[in-house]
Length: 507
Image (cartoon, rainbow, N blue to C red; front, side, top):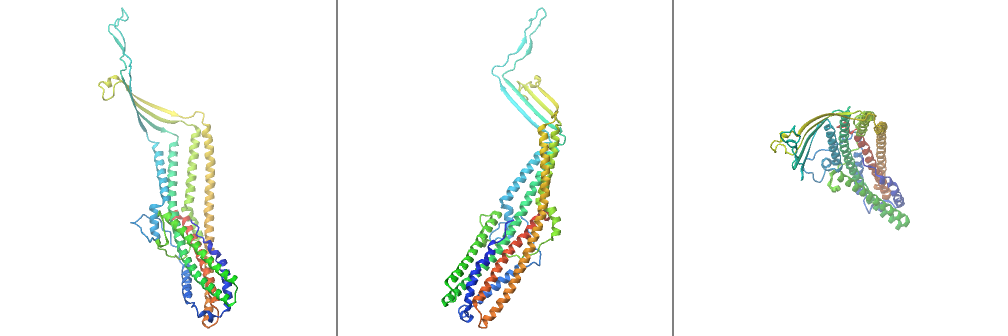
């Protein structure tokens, strides 16, 4: 999951401290003197709107919507994109998913290769030779052994001729391997299952990351509106502080501090823009697009929502559906299979197989030369063979010991993964509960500020009070709103992390 925390929000109180101090000095001027210049109603309307929007987002009444899975593209997606559009684009164009799919295809090929080891193999061998000085015929002439004969020439060897042909059709069939071939097939099947798990894990995590970045961008958009309003109010307070300097109520140093604080708000806005750009780049990369801009997205701010399960309910689901646990279990199965295979190989038991060979060797070209069958230069050979080590194999014994150690390591890693998932779930729920408490606290503070602002507004309308004090309090309340949006992003990230943990259970 991408980190959706917004560290810049925590620095708002520091950025506003000097500004509020300088503006407070301007409170010595009467509300009647300042109220005649600039009305506060435009700020009030915008302030009420951003507060209402934040309160609507801090809603825990309904469980968070389920993360939608990746889906096949339905036609050509064009901007502005919805979240479903990006999910479809990611399913078709994400480079990471393509790599995972290629790895699964390679594992499927390995599995087919392992199964093929049970089948007979058939191969051919063909050679043709031209002899420049062929061997002459060898014979015993008539009358070579008088008085016994022979009466006629006896041909012992008719000669090789200028051509020599060799043809072989060779077949091999494994008959008995002490289960080693079956173990190899099982290992390849385990590898294929692990590769398929990796694909589903990548798809689920991609969908969760897309949702997290999408929601964070929506919250950042609202935080940007708060910052923009803060900047305008800050400029107004700087203007009031300048008037206080002119009237002799504050010093130039205090006015400079106020201006620096406004500049710091602008810097926070720049940091927010940079964060948005990085999230947009991440979204574009995940969706397989060259680039994305805020105008390309049809963003909608979601309510905070509540967890879809209790902490007690989610652990059985995670134990069954966690891709991390499933992959650890797959690795454990593979190590067990490798241990069994290494133990069998260490025994040196002979593999038994059948070898069949049909061959021809002679000066006549089979099927084309006349009388080639009469030469009787072809033969059929059937062989039953065994291959193994009589005294065992020290190297294989060492490999078996290593396989046992690796199996023990895999068992330990599985236990560690199980504990890590449990700890992650517990930590996620702690973070969710803390985030909810912080958001509820932030909304209570907004209610308190709203009451104070109402009193100050009534005082100003009555001809007393100070616009500076009023706007300073409004600025403080806006800082609380900006922090609340940062907390919302963290809270939402915690909810989405639970979706990733139980991913396989939901498919």
